[in-house]
Structure formats: C-alpha cells, structure tokens
Image (cartoon, rainbow, N blue to C red):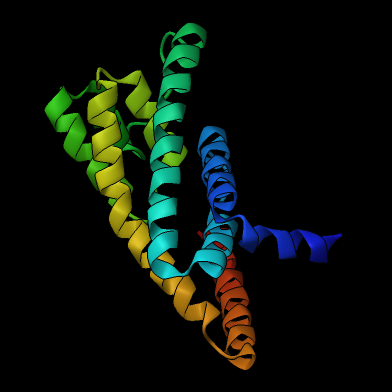
Length: 185
C-alpha cells in the first residue's frame, strides 16, 4: 500500500500541495508539532523553488487560522494569561504593544530561531494587534527562516547516502550534548 501511495503523490501535484498546506495548518494550530517532516516531504516532491512557495502559503495560512482560533478561544477561557516577564520580555512587550510596535515585534520573533511559533501567535492573539497586521508581519518574518530551512533540506536531500548518515549521526551527538548541557544548567 505504501508503494501505491508514493506512486500516486507525484501524479497529483495540486492535491499534494494542498495536503502540504493542510498539514502546515494543523501544525500551526497545535502550536507544538514540528513542521520539519512536512518541509522534507514537500522539498523532496516539488524541489526547492516550488516547495518554498507552497511552504510559505502553508505557514502563512496556518498562522492566520491559528490567530483567529486563539483569539476567539483564549479570550473566552482566560481573562489574564500568565506570561513570565523575566523569560519572555518580547512576548510581554508584544502583548501590551500598539499595532505598529507589535508588527515589528512579530517580524523579529518569527525571524529568531527557536522561538516557539505557537507562543508568538498566541501572544499576538491576546494583544491589540489586528489580523491584517499580524498576517503581514508573520509572513514577512517567516520567509527568511523558510528560505534557509527549505534550502538546507534541498541540499541535504541531494547528498549521497553516506553523508546523510553522517549528518544524522552528528545531529544525534549534538542533541545528546545539548540535553546534557541543559540538564547541568
């Protein structure tokens, strides 16, 4: 069955693109799932340029839909969200910022790696920021990160098997040392 599914995907590029976009929306709504596998699959099927366009559309749509859902749901559930001021100065600033300041903070937070996307969207949804400003800032901020991620994935996919295995091994070792360092801290 797996072979028949893989044979079917490249023959339906429009539907495949919609699936990639839909998966990106689901990842954005959950706020915690990684989108790495979606990026790898999309780049593998479509190549760098087309995959980049599809991924930008998916990430932008996911952020917009998440913003709307978070704004509707969270305002009903929480009157005052708890944001740790010491650890999240930018997020607290975003929550209390005027529209123009919030616009630039969202761009900055989207560009900075390792800032959880769901947390940025949630905080923006709790702020005074309007949907159009958030959508524009979020998309502008995501583009540089997506270019780097998509290009990196396309380069890794073009490597020979030995290099891919070496990269996986090196990543596991780096992750191990990172976790060890985090535990000591």
